[in-house]
Image 1 (cartoon, rainbow, N blue to C red):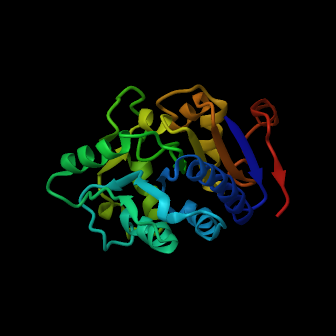
Image 2 (cartoon, rainbow, N blue to C red):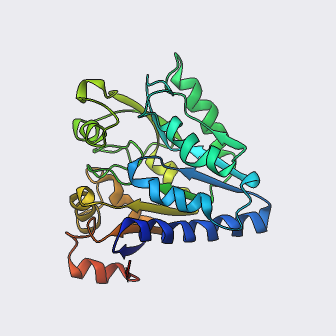
Image 3 (cartoon, rainbow, N blue to C red):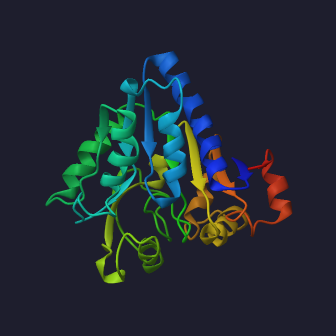
Length: 259
C-alpha cells in the first residue's frame, strides 16, 4: 500500500485521476476494455470531475460497477448513489455499459445476485473508494465482515455512518437516512487488481489515523487496504493531519505536493 498527501483536494483529485487514467488506458490497450468500480460521495467530486476530463480514455470501452446503495431510497432522492453515479460519471463521460444497484426494489437479493454475477465474471482492473468517518469502505461499517465471499451483501448502517450522511446535507435529519444498504463486500473489493482511495477533508482524519496506525481490524474497516499489494491512498493535508511522521515514513512513497 502507498500513501500520497497533497495540500488540497483539487490537486489530490487531479493526481488520483491521472493514476486512474493510466490504469484504465493500459487495460484498454491490452484487452480492448477496462472494468472499474466507482464510489460516489461528496469526497469524490473533484476526483470524478478530473477523471471525466482526462485525455485518451475511450469511455465506450469502460464497464462500470456500482459500489453501494441504500435500501429503499428512490433514484430521485439527492442522496441516491445511483443518481450520483449517473450524474458524476456515467452521463458525463458517456459510459455505455454500467451496472446500478437498485436498492429501491422489492427484491434487493435479486439485484445483488444479478450485478454480482456480472462483477465476478472477470477481474476488475481498478476500484475507486472513499473512506468513511467511521473507517468504512463501501458501506462496510465496523465491525466489518472480512470473511464473506459474497460479492454484495446487505448491511445495517451504524449511527456514525448515518450521521455522516446528514452532515453532508443529503438528508435533513437522522430519521430520513435509511438503516440498510447494499454494499460490495470487503473481500470482493480486495480482489480488484488495483485500489485507489480518495480521502480528503479534516473530518476523515481520525478514521485515517485509526486505519493506518492501528491494528488491521474489522473495527477499522479501511485498515484491510494495508494488505493489498497495489492500493494507493490519496489524502490531503487535513485528512492526514493526525498521522504520525513515523507512519508516513513507514508507508514509503509518501509525497507532499504543492497546490
